[in-house]
Image (cartoon, rainbow, N blue to C red; front, side, top):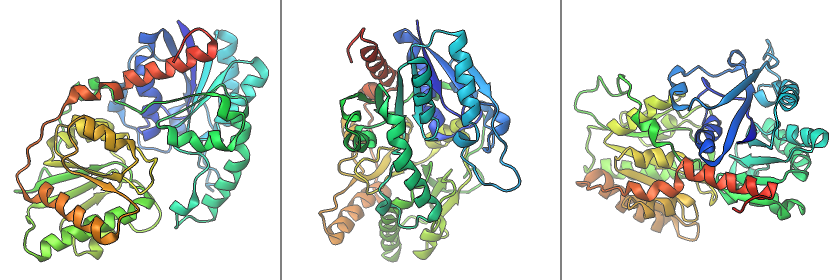
Length: 420
């Protein structure tokens, strides 16, 4: 087997969205003759609440090396673990390279700063490396109107550092090509590099892990629960305003079922108004329950399967593709989805025969037309009997196994012994 060194500061028991990228890809790499060696940080340096059950989703073939990081200290100057552990990760990588034959180095981002470690290691050892874009590094700030000086400073630094990190990379990958297309466009040499796009995908084994836990609505009598699980994106506010305004119209016209509760869980910390505050503005404080704390991954899977329906609300950004759409579909519960017409989520839902409650955003449509369409879709979703038939087999090409195969194709092509 060839050895793939994956550098990512977080690992279990930190249940962050980014950890799922190397986990899901790495779970299937040995099937394609690549052995994953993980370089990460010791868990005592994580800020996140540990999720001990999360480890059950990792296969036992990972070879994991952990290093220390600089502590946060009393004054939180640098919270980013990629900065706090940069020097230790670099030294750890050199030790691994001294002890093993490393064929390729793969660095998912964010955290973005470890991408520079790939450049440093290439300069010293000439080991090819790739950068994987879970999120864009250089962002269009017009989609983040509430951004402050820290965000704008980070953007300025990103514009300087990204070209340095990318210049010697042999491979650019990402969860969708739109996530790294600007990288190729901005950097002449990057446009000639091998690039591959593959979604997070899913590991079907995750859904076979059983937990004995209560749901957030366990003590609520006669409640009809719908659930949105995962981070809230600040640039999704316009979608949420339209969503809540439509529900308000249902209530004002006596069409709404008062037993319905909308649970928004694991939404995280973010600037601007909270989902709860947005809902309150529409008089929906008794309908909407937001729990911002991040919850264990396996708990989320269980909640999705127990709900009446699943809410998947994206953003006006054409490139946004929600990895959680796969978990939503695999819950086998009816899914209401609200995404830009060019998002890959649209194609995924259609191929799996689950676009029955898909709301497509088109910036060329008037607000009046969008509102009318949304009212029609949500009226069918919340107010009528729902029949739901998922073609799970259609998801296979979006699985983590398929994504691992795509990545390996890129790696082999870089090494000159295979095709994508």
